[in-house]
Amino acid sequence: MLEIQSLSAGYETKSSKFFHKNKIKAVENVNLTISQNKTIGLVGESGCGKSTLGRTIIKLHKADSGSIKFHGTELIGLKNKEMLGLRKKIQMIFQDPYSSLNPRMTIFEIVSEGLKIHAKYSKTEIREKTVDILEKMSLKKDILYRYPHEFSGGQRQRIAIARVLVLNPEFVVCDEIVSALDVSTQAQVINLVAEFKQKQNLSLLFISHDLSVVSYIADEIAVMYLGKIVEFASKENILKKPLHPYTNALFLSVFELKNRKKKRAILEGEIPGVFNKPTGCYFHTRCPLRKDICKVEIPKWEEVEKNHWVACHFAKLEV
View 1 (tube, rainbow, N blue to C red):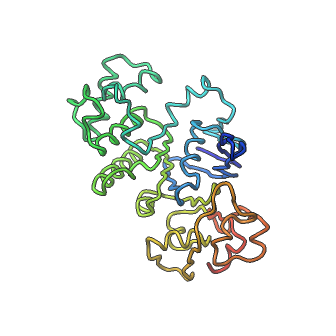
View 2 (cartoon, rainbow, N blue to C red):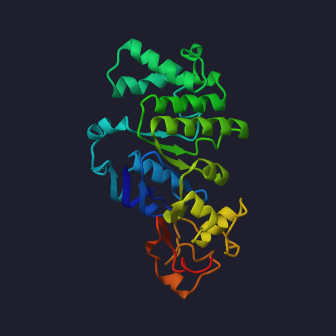
View 3 (cartoon, rainbow, N blue to C red):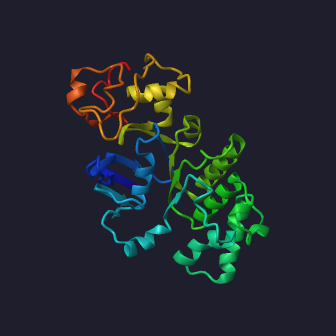
């Protein structure tokens, strides 16, 4: 359904008395395929480029190079008017339920806005669809003419989700949608999203730093480090048989992996800054398996087992 090839994106920093204008590479040469009715969990440490990748995929951030195809249609290069017809099918739920809702709009205006832009419905139909989606989010219709500030964080996030799902999209980027919520509310929101995924045949890119949440909701997991995807596989393979030392260390920090023959990979030091990324493999400065080749040669992105992709010189060895 969605095919991403060699995608790169970044930001330009402003010049000042002390710094020259520079380009930060936030996403580098990403390859990813998202199938219909599948959830890909995208994980990695803060600042690794997860949110930038999500925003670039749905064209809220400009790509520097690469390809994004949605049902065979190339999205990179499409103008805003050309993208308008696809906006209904490709949506994003944002992280912060406090800033993502317009405080001057009523709940009815917020949730129904997309229907007015992307679909030709009568006023009665728009109201019916708005009430219906809110009720599915366990929100009563008497909230229609209230404002966002009157609701809790969990209620606001359900409103934000309703705003997206009322359009019946095919692909949704969920960007840290439960990180600002308490644990009990997180569970409610995650279960709602999982339920709608099945009912509406949705495909999701679920971005999160919470590995337990990703392990619950995802079908497949992509692991990101300093702008690059370093491993991609089914959830089962990532949990039981990680082939990249970063993946191994990342998940071992939360879970006790079963049926694994690999030794615990202990990470050294801090993640390098975006302005001074290492040569060769970006992970070599922290990797317990590093050799001289890692310092000078970028590892190839290759399929080492069926539908198990990894970028590591020693992926076929014991991590």
